[in-house]
Every structure is written in structure tokens, then in C-alpha cells.
Amino acid sequence: MARILIVDDAAITRTMLRAILEKAGHQVTEAADGDAALAAFREHPAQAAFVDIFMPGKEGLATIKELLEIAPALPIIAISAGSTFTDTETLGWAKSYGAKYTLPKPLSAAAILDTLKLIFG
Image (cartoon, rainbow, N blue to C red; front, top):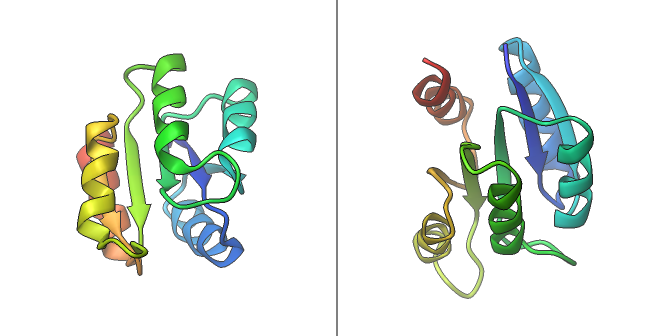
């Protein structure tokens, strides 16, 4: 299966995504912020990435932009619960930065696996 990068400052989200992805047979690399994600991606390139939008340090939109500078064809799944903006607004911004797919939080296993089927068939 694929190597997938998870970028989210919430440990519970990373743990939940890891469990779903590993159960489906994928290898997972985790990062708690954008800078760690870029370092992890350079060391272990992924075939897809889940990227949270709101994180301390390098936030998700900048992370998406920089990941796509390194790997322009990388399928990015932006994830967000929103903030003072709705999740629809923030996920729309992510698409404008190059995210191919978006998922609102709370995430469901079905939505995650359905999105991966769109990417990997």
C-alpha cells in the first residue's frame, strides 16, 4: 500500500488517522506541525498527505504550498474543523492552495477510506 503523511497538531487526530490507515495496510509518517512535516517528507516521501489547516508554527496552507513545491503531484487531503470561519471556508482556501481533496472534522473512517480509494483506486 502507500506511505501517507499525517500533519496535525492534535495528537488524538494523528492517532485516529494512523489507526485507520495502518488497518487499511498503509505506512504512516506523522508530524505535529508544518516544519516537522516538511522534514519528514524529505526523509520519507509520501504518496499522499493529510494536512490540518490550523496549527501552531507553520500552518496548513503554507505547508500545503511547500509540499507541492517539493512534489507537485502529491495528493493532499486538507482537514479542518474550522475556527472563527466555517470548515467550508477554510477547506476552500486549502483547495485554492492546491489540496486535491478536503474533509471536515470530525473525520470518519468511511470518509477517509473513500478519499483514499479516489486517490489510489
